[in-house]
Image 1 (cartoon, rainbow, N blue to C red):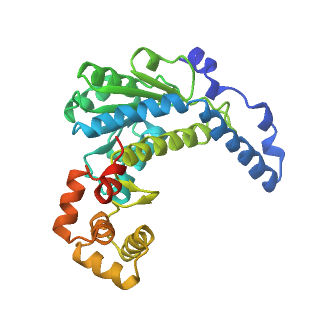
Image 2 (spheres, rainbow, N blue to C red; image 1 turned 30 degrees about the horizontal axis):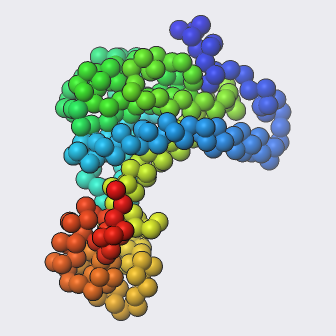
Image 3 (cartoon, one colour; image 1 turned 90 degrees about the vertical axis):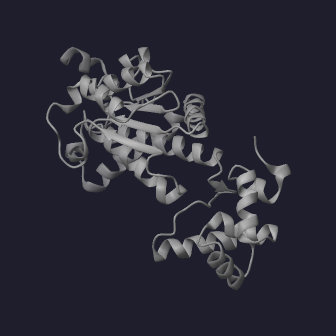
Length: 304
């Protein structure tokens, strides 16, 4: 294992930060920021792979399937974070996007010894969640060789799911398993081996792109407004009404009335105002458009 680690980009010495322990606070912060600036640039070249992976996820959603993130440690936590943010942001069922971490829920906070080294545990987690051919599984591992993640990916592939690998090194064991690979290689870390930093940031950016792109493509966004949010608290109710007003240009009084009549459903309220219809008619228009507001108010604008 030590020889394998020595070969990983994420385990190399960063020559730009080798004297970071001798610097004053502001210079340390500048160095970290300079390294972080390299991440988005590195991901630019991966746009085709990220887009193709998003298309697999979109196809899963369109076929009634789900998206699963599978990881250990930081990678697992990032998957859980992205999954947990989808219901309030896009109004999705919590089962639609799920994050699994080696060691289970306890591992979100505390390290669970040996969990990430157990390939059988990864496979059994796929069986437990009844992964099938309509699902997409994204394995996340900085090294690209975490046994738990590889075990999950292999089992998911056997079960007919689409499988994506997300790692931060080239030519890892993921390559032989995944349908698509996203090799987000961002160079050595600021602190050798601290992959929660650049590698973790790169993973977070990719996960943001995957779910956000997929949600846009299945009608969860109108313009650049998140019109399927769940207004579950005072702040979100205010945001929901603000989105309705921005989408329609209606007065606050009209927005308040439409929001009330629509039962707090933002999409419905927008269509009611823009199409000049009641709640039932707005619901029918949205159903006919597949949930796209643009198609509900103007069928000719419906995106294929």
